Amino acid sequence: MSLPPAPDDAPIRLTQFSHGAGCGCKIAPAVLETILHGRIPASEHPRLLVGHGSRDDAAVYDLGDGRALISTTDFFSPIVDDAFDFGRIAATNAISDVYAMGGTPLLAVAVLGWPVEKLPAELASRVVDGGRQVCHDLGIPLAGGHSIDAPEPFFGLAVTGEVRVANLKRNDTAQAGDRLYLTKPLGTGILTTAEKRGLLEPAHAHVARDLMLEPNVLGRELAAFDSVHAITDVTGFGLAGHLIEMAEGSGLVAELEFDQVPVREEALHYLAKGAYPDGAFRNWKSYGEKIVGAGDMTRMMILSDPQTSGGLLVAVAADHELPVEGPAGHWRPIGRFLDTAEGARLVVR
Image (cartoon, rainbow, N blue to C red; front, side, top):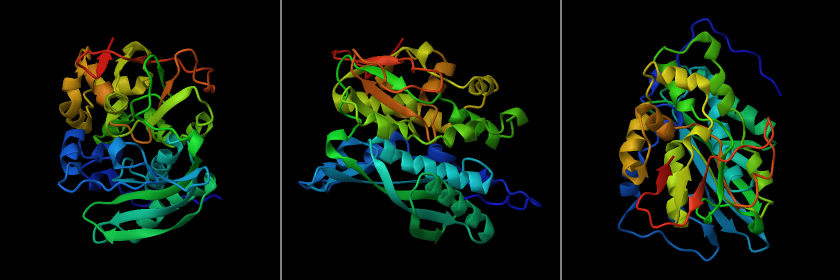
């Protein structure tokens, strides 16, 4: 399935129609905590295996026959200017939540907000086409959806998947001594900030896009291994935020070897030019007090850089490596989990 290129007589920069970009427009962790801490407690259900309490990537419902349904939704405002690419990135990011639980996506429905008085409907069609392309490539139908007239454009998917209960992976089941692996380099938030501010050089135009379009199908493969104790995907809260969630949920402390963390060289280039994402500052304000040893501004920005369609953060038993190979062989560990009484949740070496 392929589509002809869209006419480009008068290109419209979608990123100029939203105040945020991609997962960088997520509500900051501290604010989200206040929102979710309502007066009415979340209801419990005997078949709900993963729900509101774990801060996990998706909800999981036990079907009672050894299988479980995975349900998730994810949407955001434009992170790139091209409408078709925006749709593809948003869809890839949403489906990642199913892979991060060790599951297989079954179908998706679209969630679209569009400022119909500001942007042409044909452009929205290209966004949906991008989502449809990704769903086709991953072998699932885009089976409908819902749309509204909104002040800013946004797009995403609600995705249903399945997983064998025995293979379900959560973000709060890491064990002391587990090694940490990250399957994609960081830097998409910095690169897309550079694009939005007009700093991005032509040679780097597709670096972030191509990274965000890599589906995290690896999570489905990792689900079969007992040595893989926990998985989450790194998105809007940055590496530090999602690692802290894993550590808190598991009752452990994460120790990170900063020099081992993969980061795109191009992102470092734009950090030196001051392309600091606003979302990185919001993230750091929310959880910076839980981190020791972060060091200078460059480290802080990398650790809190909001990723869109980021890689998988995987906790693997201490005596094992990540049990699948990457493009250049085995991934290197970037840290480990410790059973310690140290006050911080994340220690950076």
